Length: 316
Image (cartoon, rainbow, N blue to C red; front, side, top):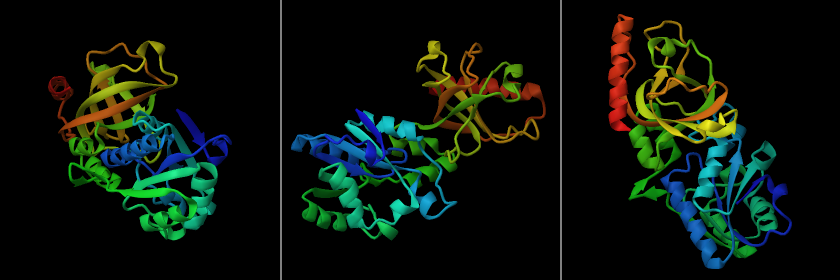
């Protein structure tokens, strides 16, 4: 597996390959169909497969201030692409200058001169080049010019159209189970564990307060059943490895305690000994249990947390 940031890192000795292109936010089930076709075509032609993606999101460059919430971090996106079988991932820095390339310039510079494309697989709604002037038909025409085959793949699974936009809508409504159906796995929020008010510890349920990167797609406020997992990045205690703990997850402002900013907190069931401050963790959302509500007493809140934990235990 090889990872390149920019075309300049592609080895000069790189031969012909089959390339798939996309933002791949979420690497959802539609993307998975596209990558599967890429890997299959590469096998047919006896060449390696390459996934080309972009950073930052093209929308933020073309229309500043419109960056969509991310379904995956760049690191996790690349991991998922490798898990699907591609041999290399090439992340292209998306700049204003890059966005002004014509379709022919993009194909010649990126696909032909550097990646030596023998085949190109994209989604059937793929657009590229300045002002999104190129489409699949354009790509096929350029393929005839530059000696590669091009295919547009429907982004569907079990007959259902899949899109990152539709997944975000489900996440923002709290329908994490619907989002998981489209993703092919639970939605995941990553971040660094920071010190909060430590009220969970005082109540007997110590939580990891996760500070996620900008533009992260956070589910609607509420209480969820899911999992917490240590990510082997940065300051993760070696003893935790990539352990996945069933977890009760709270998203919101904690209405019982006024003046608290919106947070994502997770209590790993039966674990009051975890020292995760400064560590990078992933929170996976399995099911929404209830809305956030204001309790009249701490005793009532603790009783509800016990009920939530019991429900998480049943569902995970």
